[in-house]
Length: 397
Figure (cartoon, rainbow, N blue to C red):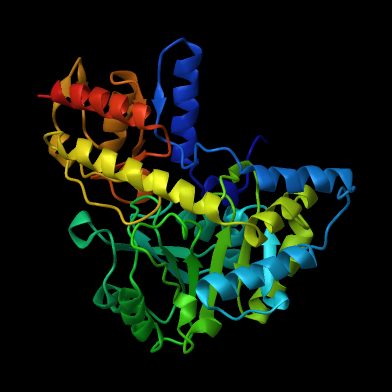
């Protein structure tokens, strides 16, 4: 019997990876595709970080590391959290994993039982609900439309919590919207959570440094709820190290021990050389992070301006990350070149095949009225992509 497990059959494939694959196939046919579908910095890993990795190879960091990561890396993370975030953690409260994606999944698998509910604001990163389903939990979505700048309110959070609620996943700065919760907004949500002691906050802060409002706020900064917060972060976005696969959690020790037990059974410690590179990233000069942040901010201003010039798109001004999430529902029901646009997935496919720009439909992010563009690409690509999108959308009648 060629039958996969029920567990696997509950999952959907990643829409972002699927669109990236489709654009690669068209490129292979000789078609000039501008890929704005993947959430990956287009910069190279900074030289001092690469040098640390080369040194690690030469010093034979080629054996198994401890499951939660090398002590030196955990110490560097503790120092980073103290210096940059004002957060006090011990090395025993840190666990390093194969990317922040595994860190999120570790936390969900360690905390969620069958039937537990996990609150996920929508729009959301495509993998959150799939991970909850993998843990046999129930995703509960709170709709946060563009009119709310894609952020949930305390009233919405209160209404969504039930006796079965086990966790809230909060991503700030957000993928896919770029929205950032201020400290005041987090405090208002925190005050709701204080009334519900069973609820753990999984705070995905992987885009922390790609921030255009000058300060990152963490739910863990509030002493009265810190013991119920799992901070997720890593090196992929801030240091252009997506392929190095290093993420971490900072959390109460009982949660870290649980994640350590889990990780010890299915991946063990992350790549030894990557850990030494990540240590250099956290402990070294941070000017590279600021240089990339400035470039992303310039690109954000460019793509927002050009998007606002396209009739039919509704655009907000993201405060972080490197995504724009325009509302495109005004095009639904319109047609061109024998195609009718029924939803944002149709629109994304139309933009790919007619405009030769790869984006991702908002259906996969829980917001079918929008679509996602990554501006982690050159200014020239952004200008050309928006020109193509404007022309393609202009054909729809």
